Amino acid sequence: MQIKLERREEIDDKRWNGCVHFALGSPPYAYTWYLDNVCEDWVGLVVGNYKIVMPIVLGKKFGIHYNYQPFFTQQLGIYSDLPISKETSTQFFNAIPSWVKYIDMSLNESNFAPEIGQSTQRINYLLDLKPTYAELREQYSGNVLRKVKKASKEDLVVSKQISPEAFADFYRKHTGPKVKGFKNKHYYSILRLVYKAIHYNMGFIIGVNNQQNELIAANFIISHPQRLINLLPASSASGNKSGAMAFLIDHLIETNSGQYKYLDFEGSMLKGVANFYKGFGAKKTSYYHIKLNLLPKFLRILKR
Image 1 (spheres, rainbow, N blue to C red):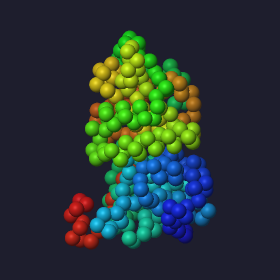
Image 2 (tube, rainbow, N blue to C red):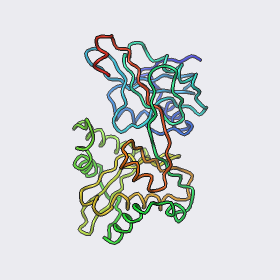
Image 3 (cartoon, rainbow, N blue to C red):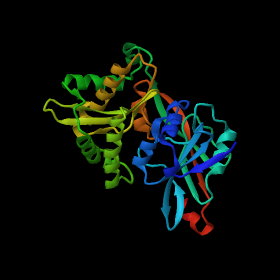
């Protein structure tokens, strides 16, 4: 199999995005417009006429190129409408340019771990939305049901009349401080990402207002033919107290039930968050995270 490297300016966006769109069970983080808004530089590994593709996100420090997993991008890896074997995965990792000295990448759920590097499994939660809303609600835990009922008694209202700027401000205020490494540049990345996704009809903002018409919970959902992605949840202290996020997710489930897609909760490895998502009946899945350190020996200690 011949794998070629293409710089960002060489990539045919239409063909690349077509591969990502029809890839088996793959999330939409590898669309060119998505990558362009979450990182400053990336290249692609391509087989044939974009039959198989793999993005390599690039950073540079002290003159050394490295790969990293960008913010707001849970999974990347190899995309194809054909099953990807362990052998194919290994071939792709071997095709990463030798000038990339450190690899830190999360593959998507359809990928096997390559036979090189250090692999660990990470957790995600998916809720199959094919059943009816009544059937799905029967799977809710007692804790989730209590939160939803409490929110209903407080007369909370779901709103979709939220501007990208208002959403990004809300996220920066209430979630940003809890996210390790979150900087002002990530605020602008959120703005660009939200505008682009809405432009391509692949995302929407949804929120919850209290009786005073104050926004107390919000989320940006990436909408893909195969799944809805719980991308950027944020809740104020008041929202946490009133169960607003549970109310918001329940609304998403009710309005999308009976469809051939999944609600993708995007994790989590944090026990409390994982238990909250499991409380909606979501099932645990896993994906591989790969690290490969090719730095000179005197620098390897910096990336342990």
